[in-house]
Length: 219
Image (cartoon, rainbow, N blue to C red; front, side, top):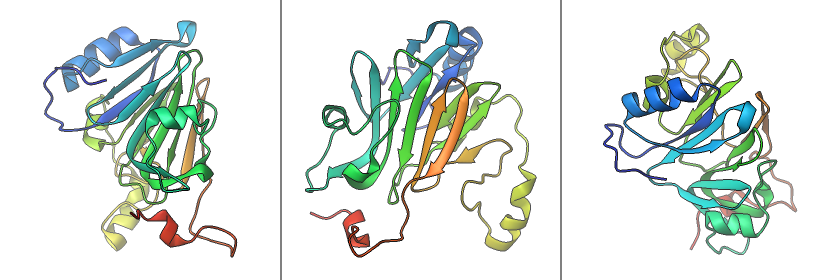
């Protein structure tokens, strides 16, 4: 997925969906970030794009899987993006977060339909900042890359009281209007221009559930 284009952003990943391939893919991505992404044509629905300098990417005839970070099975064997496919853990409809541990952001994108899913587990070091507007979506682990692609940036006024109390943006909030952050344990679904986010994992354990120690990387 990496190209030879020069960029000032360092390592990053960016993906999304646009209905304006000429203006967004050829103007914004190439001129502002200096990249040429992998593009999937969804026909009348628009075009999906993906670019990563360091992510583990696997591809089938119908989908693309992306893994940022380390993932292991319940038996503590490392899992690649291809193995997530092979074991049926990821599809463009869902990610079965009960089948793996680690510190990763995992996503799966359809090559046939306007849909994808992304999951950030509790120990993930990779962030996902995203913006959904007018039926289009942009997501990146690098906030600077994301805001570089937006023509007009406005302050998120909801963050002001939190900034003065905590000096940072808690939870899903960011300092920029209409830009959100996926929280640990959340899964994001994109379907035909509709976005939904829900919690599927937290730190509340039952006696029969896995312990906090199992979430942390172990040899």
